[in-house]
Image (tube, rainbow, N blue to C red; front, side, top):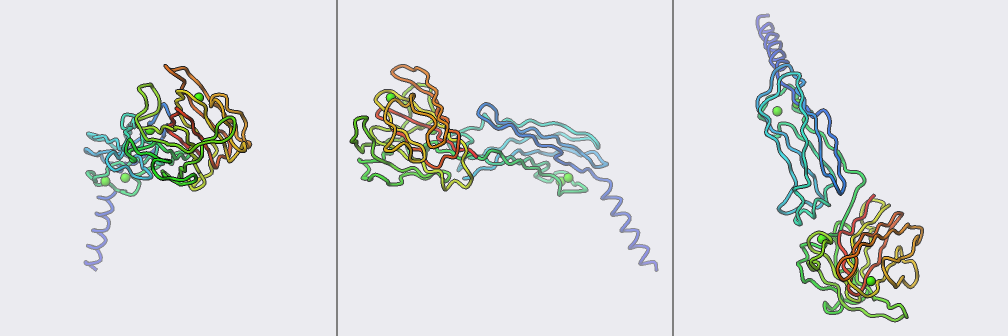
Length: 306
Ligand SMILES: [Ca+2]
Ligand SMILES: [Ca+2]
Ligand SMILES: [Ca+2]
Ligand SMILES: [Ca+2]
């Protein structure tokens, strides 16, 4: 009988001790993720009945693929949080953009973790994480590194038309004949390089010199409803097609490309720069394939969105 009493007492005591503990929770996680802003806002609360001492809060930007050296994470040191109190933290990821993490283009999820190092013993350790999947999903080709600047595709690399030369984030890039306005064509070279010293792209870009690049989005893992890229046109004419249309291919000034093509709306902006023009292409609709190339023509940040 005495034994049972002691056992009961221990049970009550443990319950009391457990009940008298902080409980840190991530109550809310809001993510703003677009070209201008890459921020996560979390409300952290202590819903326990004891004050919490110091702890940390991590905001992780989960990537696919994971970058080798610049995994985006924002961390906070919190000196303490009284019982019943809450605080709001804002993590700004924009300054963490780096070529090594594809300028944050591979981020698909934001995770907020309270007390990741378990510095506070809590009544509930299983409510310390909240995640937000970024929507729409997005996959991009940013032209490295890798590959290194100077990498060439096409004739000098021994490629033949149709060769797949690059695979990035499920997007396949192949090389094809460039077609002249009057018919006939050529198969010359595309080169990974730093762009001319004009505000265009981010880091490395790809130059097309009388060759076409085809981007195939069919292996991307989600339905594509939008494709965007940035371009720099320093002369000559361009080729352009969407989902294999028109046949054989549009040849002319890229900024005058027709719209719609194959049911996809085509929007090209154009701003003058010394020696040419730069701008963006936005394709809105179900895009499976995009073919593009020119003569003195660069592109960067080919992004497909859900
Ligand atoms: Ca907790
Ligand atoms: Ca803890
Ligand atoms: Ca780039
Ligand atoms: Ca042109």
